[in-house]
Amino acid sequence: MTDEILLPTPEAPLKIGTRGSPLALAQAHETRLRLMAAHGLPEAAFEIVVIKTTGDRVQDRSLSEIGGKGLFTKEIEEALLAGELHIAVHSTKDMPTVLPQGLVMDCFLPREDPRDAFVSLKYRSIAELPEGAVMGTSSLRRRAQLAARRPDLRFVEFRGNLQTRMRKLEEGVAEATFLAMAGLNRMGMDEVPKAAIALEEMLPAVAQGAIGIERRAGDIATAALLAEIHDPETGLRLKAERAFLETLDGSCQTPIAAHAEIVGETLRLRGEILRPDGSAVIRGERTGALGEGAALGAGLARALLDEAGPGFFDWR
Image 1 (cartoon, rainbow, N blue to C red):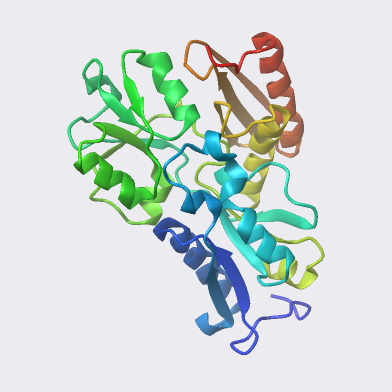
Image 2: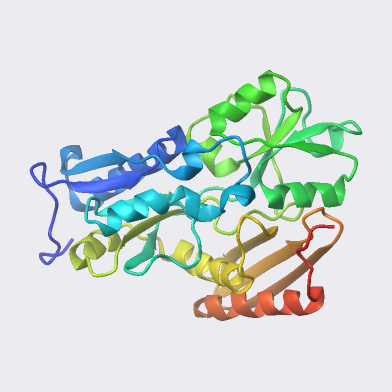
Protein backbone atom coordinates (compact mmCIF):
# COMPACT_ATOMS: atom_id res chain seq x y z
CA MET A 1 0.00 0.00 0.00
CA THR A 2 1.34 3.45 -0.89
CA ASP A 3 0.55 6.88 0.48
CA GLU A 4 -0.91 7.88 -2.89
CA ILE A 5 -3.84 5.46 -2.59
CA LEU A 6 -6.99 7.22 -1.41
CA LEU A 7 -8.69 4.73 0.89
CA PRO A 8 -12.45 4.45 1.37
CA THR A 9 -13.91 4.93 4.85
CA PRO A 10 -17.12 3.93 6.65
CA GLU A 11 -18.29 7.52 6.07
CA ALA A 12 -17.41 7.39 2.36
CA PRO A 13 -17.50 3.69 1.43
CA LEU A 14 -16.46 2.14 -1.86
CA LYS A 15 -19.67 1.06 -3.59
CA ILE A 16 -19.50 -2.40 -5.18
CA GLY A 17 -22.15 -3.19 -7.78
CA THR A 18 -23.32 -6.76 -8.38
CA ARG A 19 -26.21 -8.91 -9.49
CA GLY A 20 -28.28 -10.38 -6.69
CA SER A 21 -27.85 -14.13 -7.24
CA PRO A 22 -26.15 -16.10 -4.45
CA LEU A 23 -23.12 -16.68 -6.69
CA ALA A 24 -22.86 -13.04 -7.73
CA LEU A 25 -23.03 -12.00 -4.07
CA ALA A 26 -20.34 -14.54 -3.16
CA GLN A 27 -18.09 -13.00 -5.82
CA ALA A 28 -18.76 -9.48 -4.51
CA HIS A 29 -17.99 -10.63 -0.98
CA GLU A 30 -14.73 -12.20 -2.14
CA THR A 31 -13.77 -8.94 -3.81
CA ARG A 32 -14.55 -7.00 -0.64
CA LEU A 33 -12.53 -9.41 1.51
CA ARG A 34 -9.52 -9.14 -0.79
CA LEU A 35 -9.69 -5.34 -0.75
CA MET A 36 -10.04 -5.33 3.05
CA ALA A 37 -6.97 -7.57 3.42
CA ALA A 38 -4.87 -5.70 0.85
CA HIS A 39 -5.50 -2.29 2.41
CA GLY A 40 -6.19 -3.10 6.08
CA LEU A 41 -9.74 -1.75 5.91
CA PRO A 42 -12.89 -2.62 7.88
CA GLU A 43 -15.93 -4.14 6.21
CA ALA A 44 -17.81 -0.88 6.79
CA ALA A 45 -15.53 0.85 4.28
CA PHE A 46 -17.38 -1.03 1.52
CA GLU A 47 -21.02 -1.13 0.49
CA ILE A 48 -22.39 -3.90 -1.72
CA VAL A 49 -25.13 -2.60 -4.02
CA VAL A 50 -27.42 -5.18 -5.64
CA ILE A 51 -28.79 -4.32 -9.08
CA LYS A 52 -31.28 -6.50 -10.93
CA THR A 53 -30.42 -6.90 -14.61
CA THR A 54 -32.53 -7.77 -17.62
CA GLY A 55 -30.88 -11.19 -17.74
CA ASP A 56 -32.07 -11.84 -14.18
CA ARG A 57 -35.63 -10.69 -14.84
CA VAL A 58 -36.25 -12.68 -18.04
CA GLN A 59 -35.99 -16.38 -17.20
CA ASP A 60 -38.32 -18.03 -19.71
CA ARG A 61 -36.23 -17.54 -22.85
CA SER A 62 -32.66 -18.31 -23.88
CA LEU A 63 -30.03 -15.58 -23.84
CA SER A 64 -29.58 -15.89 -27.60
CA GLU A 65 -33.26 -15.00 -28.03
CA ILE A 66 -33.27 -11.91 -25.83
CA GLY A 67 -29.97 -10.27 -26.68
CA GLY A 68 -26.88 -12.06 -25.36
CA LYS A 69 -24.24 -11.35 -22.76
CA GLY A 70 -24.88 -7.64 -22.19
CA LEU A 71 -28.18 -8.50 -20.51
CA PHE A 72 -26.30 -9.34 -17.31
CA THR A 73 -24.34 -6.08 -17.26
CA LYS A 74 -26.38 -3.24 -18.82
CA GLU A 75 -28.06 -1.85 -15.71
CA ILE A 76 -24.94 -2.27 -13.58
CA GLU A 77 -22.79 -0.45 -16.12
CA GLU A 78 -25.32 2.37 -16.36
CA ALA A 79 -25.07 2.84 -12.58
CA LEU A 80 -21.27 2.75 -12.82
CA LEU A 81 -21.20 5.41 -15.53
CA ALA A 82 -23.66 7.54 -13.53
CA GLY A 83 -21.29 7.55 -10.55
CA GLU A 84 -23.65 5.51 -8.35
CA LEU A 85 -20.99 2.77 -8.04
CA HIS A 86 -17.21 2.76 -7.83
CA ILE A 87 -16.72 -0.76 -9.18
CA ALA A 88 -18.78 -3.62 -10.59
CA VAL A 89 -18.00 -7.29 -9.98
CA HIS A 90 -18.74 -9.71 -12.81
CA SER A 91 -18.30 -13.28 -13.93
CA THR A 92 -15.95 -12.43 -16.79
CA LYS A 93 -17.49 -15.08 -19.03
CA ASP A 94 -20.69 -12.97 -19.00
CA MET A 95 -18.86 -9.87 -20.22
CA PRO A 96 -18.87 -8.68 -23.83
CA THR A 97 -15.37 -8.14 -25.23
CA VAL A 98 -16.16 -4.51 -26.06
CA LEU A 99 -17.18 -2.45 -23.01
CA PRO A 100 -19.22 0.75 -23.02
CA GLN A 101 -17.19 3.89 -23.65
CA GLY A 102 -15.73 5.20 -20.41
CA LEU A 103 -15.46 1.81 -18.68
CA VAL A 104 -12.50 -0.56 -18.33
CA MET A 105 -11.97 -3.99 -16.79
CA ASP A 106 -8.29 -4.46 -15.98
CA CYS A 107 -8.49 -6.20 -12.60
CA PHE A 108 -9.04 -9.94 -12.34
CA LEU A 109 -9.01 -12.10 -9.22
CA PRO A 110 -7.15 -15.43 -9.17
CA ARG A 111 -9.00 -17.82 -11.44
CA GLU A 112 -11.05 -20.66 -9.97
CA ASP A 113 -11.42 -24.09 -11.61
CA PRO A 114 -12.40 -23.29 -15.24
CA ARG A 115 -13.90 -26.71 -16.02
CA ASP A 116 -17.54 -27.56 -16.58
CA ALA A 117 -19.25 -29.93 -14.18
CA PHE A 118 -21.65 -32.70 -15.20
CA VAL A 119 -24.46 -32.67 -12.66
CA SER A 120 -27.13 -35.34 -12.31
CA LEU A 121 -29.17 -36.96 -9.57
CA LYS A 122 -29.18 -40.26 -11.50
CA TYR A 123 -25.99 -40.60 -13.55
CA ARG A 124 -22.29 -40.09 -12.91
CA SER A 125 -21.08 -39.06 -16.37
CA ILE A 126 -22.12 -38.14 -19.89
CA ALA A 127 -21.30 -41.68 -20.97
CA GLU A 128 -23.86 -43.09 -18.51
CA LEU A 129 -26.74 -41.07 -19.97
CA PRO A 130 -29.17 -43.44 -21.72
CA GLU A 131 -30.10 -42.93 -25.35
CA GLY A 132 -32.57 -40.08 -25.77
CA ALA A 133 -31.95 -38.65 -22.29
CA VAL A 134 -32.95 -35.03 -21.65
CA MET A 135 -30.15 -32.55 -20.90
CA GLY A 136 -30.98 -29.15 -19.45
CA THR A 137 -28.82 -26.22 -20.54
CA SER A 138 -29.22 -22.64 -21.74
CA SER A 139 -25.69 -22.53 -23.17
CA LEU A 140 -25.35 -22.89 -26.94
CA ARG A 141 -21.71 -23.86 -26.42
CA ARG A 142 -22.48 -26.71 -24.06
CA ARG A 143 -25.39 -27.85 -26.18
CA ALA A 144 -23.28 -27.92 -29.36
CA GLN A 145 -20.37 -29.67 -27.63
CA LEU A 146 -22.62 -32.36 -26.23
CA ALA A 147 -24.61 -32.76 -29.45
CA ALA A 148 -21.32 -33.33 -31.28
CA ARG A 149 -20.61 -36.29 -28.99
CA ARG A 150 -24.13 -37.51 -28.32
CA PRO A 151 -26.53 -36.56 -31.14
CA ASP A 152 -29.13 -38.87 -29.60
CA LEU A 153 -29.70 -36.60 -26.60
CA ARG A 154 -32.55 -34.12 -26.28
CA PHE A 155 -32.23 -30.62 -24.82
CA VAL A 156 -34.47 -28.33 -22.78
CA GLU A 157 -33.90 -24.70 -21.78
CA PHE A 158 -32.39 -24.42 -18.28
CA ARG A 159 -32.15 -20.80 -17.15
CA GLY A 160 -31.82 -19.58 -13.57
CA ASN A 161 -29.25 -19.62 -10.80
CA LEU A 162 -27.61 -22.70 -9.38
CA GLN A 163 -30.38 -23.36 -6.87
CA THR A 164 -33.07 -23.05 -9.55
CA ARG A 165 -31.31 -25.52 -11.82
CA MET A 166 -30.92 -28.06 -9.03
CA ARG A 167 -34.64 -27.77 -8.28
CA LYS A 168 -35.45 -28.42 -11.94
CA LEU A 169 -33.39 -31.61 -11.79
CA GLU A 170 -35.29 -32.72 -8.68
CA GLU A 171 -38.59 -32.03 -10.48
CA GLY A 172 -37.52 -34.22 -13.41
CA VAL A 173 -37.43 -31.43 -16.02
CA ALA A 174 -34.13 -32.96 -17.19
CA GLU A 175 -31.94 -35.87 -16.21
CA ALA A 176 -28.70 -33.89 -16.12
CA THR A 177 -27.25 -30.43 -16.57
CA PHE A 178 -23.94 -28.60 -16.67
CA LEU A 179 -22.70 -26.10 -14.11
CA ALA A 180 -19.38 -24.33 -13.75
CA MET A 181 -17.00 -25.91 -11.24
CA ALA A 182 -15.97 -22.38 -10.22
CA GLY A 183 -19.49 -21.48 -9.11
CA LEU A 184 -19.93 -24.71 -7.17
CA ASN A 185 -16.58 -24.17 -5.43
CA ARG A 186 -17.27 -20.53 -4.59
CA MET A 187 -20.65 -21.48 -3.15
CA GLY A 188 -19.14 -24.33 -1.12
CA MET A 189 -21.70 -26.72 -2.59
CA ASP A 190 -19.86 -29.97 -1.95
CA GLU A 191 -23.18 -31.81 -1.66
CA VAL A 192 -24.04 -31.31 -5.34
CA PRO A 193 -23.53 -34.60 -7.24
CA LYS A 194 -20.98 -33.53 -9.85
CA ALA A 195 -18.12 -34.73 -11.99
CA ALA A 196 -15.59 -32.26 -13.38
CA ILE A 197 -15.16 -32.63 -17.14
CA ALA A 198 -11.55 -32.68 -18.33
CA LEU A 199 -10.47 -29.79 -20.54
CA GLU A 200 -9.43 -32.32 -23.18
CA GLU A 201 -13.02 -33.56 -23.25
CA MET A 202 -14.86 -30.24 -23.11
CA LEU A 203 -13.25 -26.80 -23.43
CA PRO A 204 -14.97 -24.18 -21.25
CA ALA A 205 -16.41 -20.80 -22.12
CA VAL A 206 -13.97 -17.95 -22.57
CA ALA A 207 -12.89 -16.62 -19.14
CA GLN A 208 -14.91 -19.24 -17.23
CA GLY A 209 -13.98 -19.21 -13.54
CA ALA A 210 -12.57 -15.68 -13.53
CA ILE A 211 -13.97 -12.71 -11.62
CA GLY A 212 -13.50 -9.39 -13.43
CA ILE A 213 -13.81 -5.97 -11.81
CA GLU A 214 -15.02 -3.07 -13.93
CA ARG A 215 -14.47 0.63 -13.17
CA ARG A 216 -14.66 4.04 -14.80
CA ALA A 217 -11.67 4.71 -17.04
CA GLY A 218 -10.80 8.03 -15.41
CA ASP A 219 -11.12 6.87 -11.80
CA ILE A 220 -7.44 6.78 -10.87
CA ALA A 221 -8.07 6.38 -7.13
CA THR A 222 -10.12 3.24 -7.64
CA ALA A 223 -7.60 1.90 -10.15
CA ALA A 224 -4.89 2.17 -7.49
CA LEU A 225 -7.05 0.29 -4.98
CA LEU A 226 -7.73 -2.51 -7.44
CA ALA A 227 -4.12 -2.85 -8.56
CA GLU A 228 -3.33 -4.42 -5.18
CA ILE A 229 -5.69 -7.35 -5.76
CA HIS A 230 -5.16 -7.95 -9.50
CA ASP A 231 -3.82 -11.40 -10.42
CA PRO A 232 -1.34 -10.94 -13.31
CA GLU A 233 -1.42 -14.60 -14.41
CA THR A 234 -5.20 -14.56 -14.80
CA GLY A 235 -4.91 -11.29 -16.71
CA LEU A 236 -2.43 -12.79 -19.18
CA ARG A 237 -4.60 -15.84 -19.77
CA LEU A 238 -7.76 -13.84 -20.29
CA LYS A 239 -6.09 -11.45 -22.70
CA ALA A 240 -5.58 -14.40 -25.06
CA GLU A 241 -9.04 -15.90 -24.54
CA ARG A 242 -10.92 -12.61 -24.91
CA ALA A 243 -8.92 -11.66 -28.03
CA PHE A 244 -9.94 -15.03 -29.50
CA LEU A 245 -13.60 -14.29 -28.72
CA GLU A 246 -13.45 -10.70 -29.96
CA THR A 247 -11.93 -11.70 -33.31
CA LEU A 248 -14.67 -14.29 -33.76
CA ASP A 249 -17.24 -11.62 -32.88
CA GLY A 250 -18.53 -14.10 -30.35
CA SER A 251 -21.75 -13.78 -28.41
CA CYS A 252 -24.27 -16.06 -26.73
CA GLN A 253 -25.48 -16.86 -30.25
CA THR A 254 -22.23 -18.52 -31.34
CA PRO A 255 -20.82 -21.74 -29.82
CA ILE A 256 -17.22 -20.85 -28.94
CA ALA A 257 -14.86 -22.36 -26.37
CA ALA A 258 -11.30 -21.51 -25.35
CA HIS A 259 -8.80 -22.00 -22.58
CA ALA A 260 -5.37 -20.47 -22.01
CA GLU A 261 -2.78 -21.75 -19.57
CA ILE A 262 0.72 -20.74 -18.58
CA VAL A 263 3.41 -23.41 -18.77
CA GLY A 264 6.72 -21.99 -17.57
CA GLU A 265 7.33 -18.91 -19.71
CA THR A 266 4.92 -20.03 -22.43
CA LEU A 267 1.26 -19.22 -23.00
CA ARG A 268 -0.78 -22.07 -24.50
CA LEU A 269 -4.17 -21.31 -26.02
CA ARG A 270 -6.67 -23.92 -27.18
CA GLY A 271 -9.87 -22.93 -28.93
CA GLU A 272 -12.78 -24.38 -30.85
CA ILE A 273 -15.80 -23.25 -32.80
CA LEU A 274 -18.85 -25.42 -33.38
CA ARG A 275 -21.92 -25.45 -35.55
CA PRO A 276 -24.89 -24.75 -33.28
CA ASP A 277 -26.29 -28.24 -33.87
CA GLY A 278 -22.94 -29.91 -33.11
CA SER A 279 -22.61 -31.29 -36.64
CA ALA A 280 -19.10 -29.86 -37.07
CA VAL A 281 -16.30 -28.85 -34.71
CA ILE A 282 -13.09 -27.03 -35.67
CA ARG A 283 -10.28 -26.95 -33.12
CA GLY A 284 -6.86 -25.36 -32.94
CA GLU A 285 -4.00 -24.45 -30.64
CA ARG A 286 -1.31 -21.77 -30.47
CA THR A 287 1.63 -21.18 -28.14
CA GLY A 288 3.75 -18.10 -27.61
CA ALA A 289 5.41 -15.76 -25.13
CA LEU A 290 3.44 -14.59 -22.10
CA GLY A 291 3.02 -11.09 -23.47
CA GLU A 292 1.67 -12.27 -26.82
CA GLY A 293 -1.82 -13.23 -25.62
CA ALA A 294 -3.76 -10.78 -27.77
CA ALA A 295 -1.89 -11.80 -30.92
CA LEU A 296 -2.25 -15.50 -30.09
CA GLY A 297 -5.97 -15.20 -29.57
CA ALA A 298 -6.60 -13.18 -32.71
CA GLY A 299 -4.35 -15.42 -34.80
CA LEU A 300 -6.01 -18.64 -33.66
CA ALA A 301 -9.46 -17.18 -34.28
CA ARG A 302 -8.57 -16.15 -37.83
CA ALA A 303 -7.12 -19.60 -38.55
CA LEU A 304 -10.30 -21.34 -37.39
CA LEU A 305 -12.50 -18.95 -39.36
CA ASP A 306 -10.45 -19.58 -42.50
CA GLU A 307 -10.87 -23.33 -42.04
CA ALA A 308 -14.59 -23.01 -41.32
CA GLY A 309 -15.52 -20.85 -44.29
CA PRO A 310 -18.59 -18.57 -44.56
CA GLY A 311 -21.87 -19.50 -42.92
CA PHE A 312 -20.30 -21.89 -40.42
CA PHE A 313 -22.40 -20.67 -37.47
CA ASP A 314 -25.70 -20.77 -39.38
CA TRP A 315 -28.34 -23.12 -38.03
CA ARG A 316 -28.75 -26.31 -40.04
